[in-house]
Length: 89
Image (cartoon, rainbow, N blue to C red; front, side, top):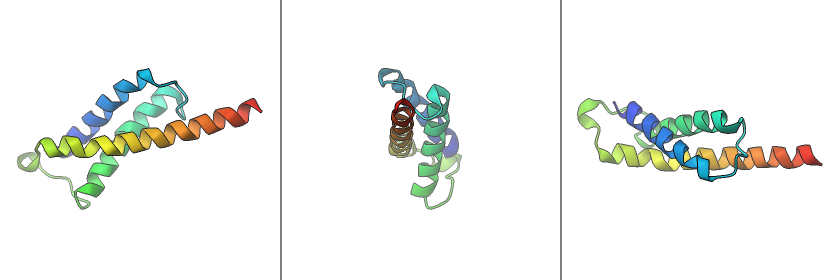
């Protein structure tokens, strides 16, 4: 159940990327994939390589996914921005 929460938080954070210039690696679809994977992987690592079940899922699980999604989106944006700069020169 926590995996679902992590992925949904990644998607929720992704929705706010409409306010950021689209320089993500792979465009907006790439940002979607990166946000969901980043949130899921970070949540998995933060819980000691386990996925808590239905009875162990609390609000904290949703908050754990936020830094993972933001870190992954930031890395994707920086990489895409760098690729865009090298393509112009």
